[in-house]
Length: 229
Image 1 (cartoon, rainbow, N blue to C red):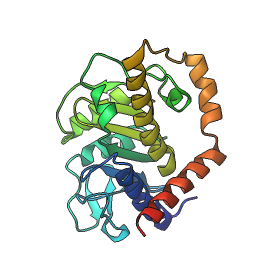
Image 2 (cartoon, rainbow, N blue to C red; image 1 turned 90 degrees about the vertical axis):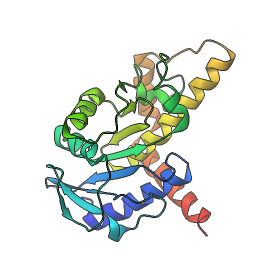
Image 3 (cartoon, rainbow, N blue to C red; image 1 turned 180 degrees about the vertical axis):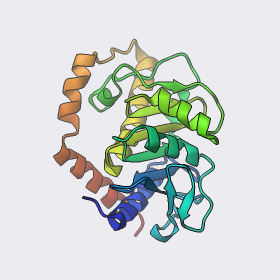
Image 4 (cartoon, rainbow, N blue to C red; image 1 turned 60 degrees about the horizontal axis):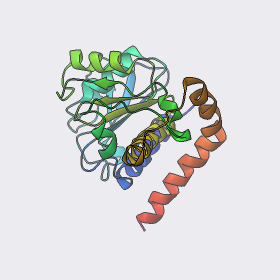
């Protein structure tokens, strides 16, 4: 089982990766469930490029800060609602990927056309309100829109990705923007050919088995560490 200390390290690593890849710039947040508890860790109202382990907050499922001295993110209710209503979700990223955002403000569905996009079979749902997720009701509405999918687009306001682990939530964020970039590029030169649900299911098995999840996570951590030297 992952310890709280390891979760803290992984949240900071996730924050640095998302910042380095420009999936967040100044804003955004990451959270992770503390095993066997009704609490979760979350980055405070500090840039993900700058946040430290000591600055992380502990919140309960009522949205209350139970440990930490910094302000919680304005959209902490988003994390609280998803953690409360989706017990299989253990990690969340709140990002602002530029190309994926285009698909939240148009009628063109973001659907998979390549292997790494296969996790978004059937298209990525859109939460249609442009409001920041600042209340319990809005958080619950986003959670309902997400259903059992790995990502949801917030209309004109970025994206949310989830996972069973921090690395999985981060890879869904990376793959979400990659899927948007590939689809956007395809639309410039022709008619995209989406993966079918069956094709997506098979591609998911091949694209990110546990050994390759660890491989990808270590690659991006190493990339960030080398960039900061």
